[in-house]
Image 1 (tube, rainbow, N blue to C red):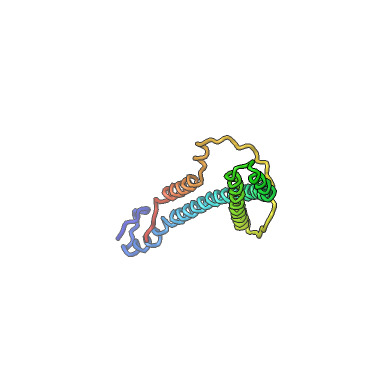
Image 2: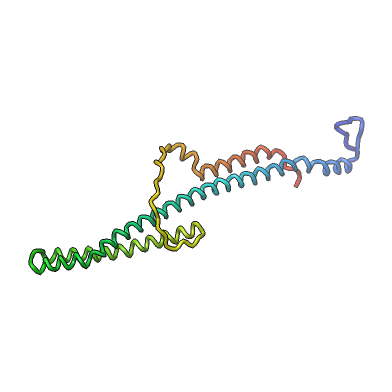
Length: 195
């Protein structure tokens, strides 16, 4: 016989005591186990939100950077093309001067090399423009084709507080979310119940 702890004048058999313990004891830790799982899921969700916010910011900066690359390549192409368009006029005058011994042959060759370099630069700027356009198309999910970029007036850059940047870094925020979840899970780890 097992003496009842509440009513000391009452006693039950050992098998009845085991049956009561089997029904009640596993339930003692069930709420805490459920709360631990909720805390763990909340921590994972908070971490995912931090990483998603950081990805949105990085995507915006990536779009701005590629737009700036596209605009820079477009402007460089205009200048390079204007220089190449003057090749026939300039070289014909330089050849005439070289024939009249008013210009050294080496200076004529330097001018020709300058135009060849400009043609090479035009190919490179066109490649940069195409790369930036393709990247913008992938980031925006749209078929952009060829377009005219315009310079954008940006607001002045804000003052940079290094401590603030470090405190709000996405990786540190994700670690804080993980730590909060682990702390909450630890506070609920008092009861485990019978497995």
